[in-house]
Image (cartoon, rainbow, N blue to C red):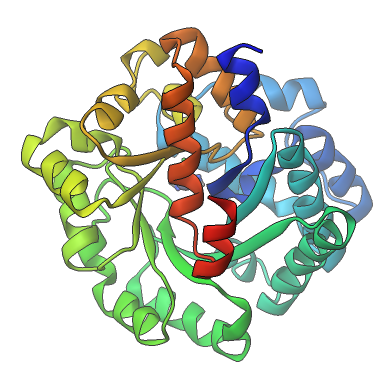
Length: 326
Ligand code: ES4
Ligand code: ZN
């Protein structure tokens, strides 16, 4: 076996996946037909041809437009099950899955419809092959903190079914400091919290996520490599970084994979691991990320082992479960 084959077959966790970003064009058209909705594209191929992004915002515009086909509990269940079935092929044994309730409640879909559907898909995967999952509710940072607070209120009746909170959407101009109060409430509920930071935003946003939001992990964080003091702190504190290599290349954070800072992050001892982010839109699932990294960097077995151990270590499961995995 080659290091690539061993990497693909190793058990691993995925900690940064937006369930709405796993909506493949084929499923989008199937759900549009089921719900009597017209997508603004003629065919699967025409939609896929639109996956030519110049930055985060150009992607988000399409991502939110496509999410409109998600209407019923069954739609969310089918979406979740399709992702987990695909993740299983890459030997993902545990997935912590982001969802964006505001994208759906703004269209009149009830919070409970979204949650029940996602849970039904996850329960099917658990029953069929023992898949382990957690749900992380993300607030949309282009909206106000008051809207995030209102979303938290909507989630409170179901709080035992929400395993953590996150912050996503347009990063530039929406610093973590905008959400300091609502994140304090999430932490007071005893929930782990994470935030996207240092994807397109500057290292200062990573400091804010750490110091003001007191996050347990940083999502992306790749621009930390611009700030040596921040790199030293992330290494010292072993803050997990949920890095998404194909996403970063597709959204032009790096011009090509060989320019990705993942080797630098690992080289300086940061607790980074790899994830797919929005696999339907960015050229693939975890296995595709592994193949692209291997082509660019030819990682050895020890590097792959570190990446997958970092993913399992940084998961939000109880200590006994984590220890059994490692
Ligand atoms: C996202 Cl790649 C990325 N960044 C920020 N927010 C997001 N939501 C879905 N994908
Ligand atoms: Zn993301």
